[in-house]
Amino acid sequence: MKVYFVRHGQTTWNKRKKLQGQHDTKLTPRGVEQARLAGEGMKDIPFDCIISSPLSRARVTAEEIRRDRPLEIEFDDRLKEIDFGRDNGRCFWKTMNDPHFVRYQRFFNEPHLYKPIKGAESYQVVMDRAEEFFRERVIPLEGKKENVLVVGHTTWMHAFIIRFTGRPMSELWNSSFGKNCEAIIFEVKDGKMEMVCENRMFYDEADLTHA
Image 1 (cartoon, one colour):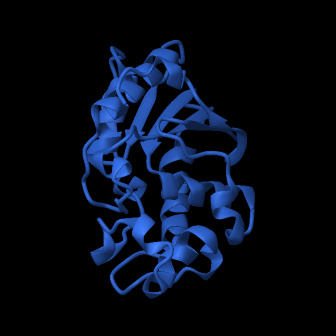
Image 2 (tube, helix red, strand yellow):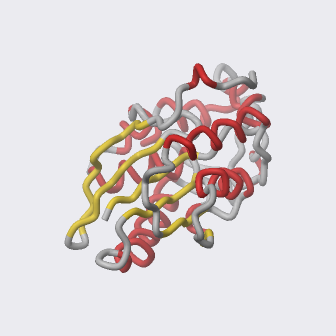
């Protein structure tokens, strides 16, 4: 069984370089087009299951990739992005050189040292959510489904890569994955997951008409 993890399209807060977390931001016209083109590029993959984060940026991306497949999109709260608590919406580019925001400099540059504020999530919590999702939702599909689409968020997917490849936390952001509507592909066999592709784009950015 192959599992395609796809990041959502560009959002309004992606453009403004804001920490989105679990705030329900919307796709920009470019983001919708990215999802549509990704769906065109994946049209020949016979998905037989689609699972998405319930946040609208992921849901709309999943709908665009689904196209005319007669599939219901399933939603799972465990796929939501990391929660920054009261810092959801903070402009992260303003924090990178501000000594008052060392935590977010560590979030991106030294993830193994990142400590969230009260009410926010740690990387470990996100990895635990990712593993629970995998064990309880994905593994039982083996032998029943062949191609599964999972649509979600950047930090969650980087945490997923770390958990299932055994890489150290310090390398969380060293992955080549990260563009909007980019895919990571895993193969599940005998209850184990192996990454077969870390940064697959199913559309050409040169074809985008929206800035």
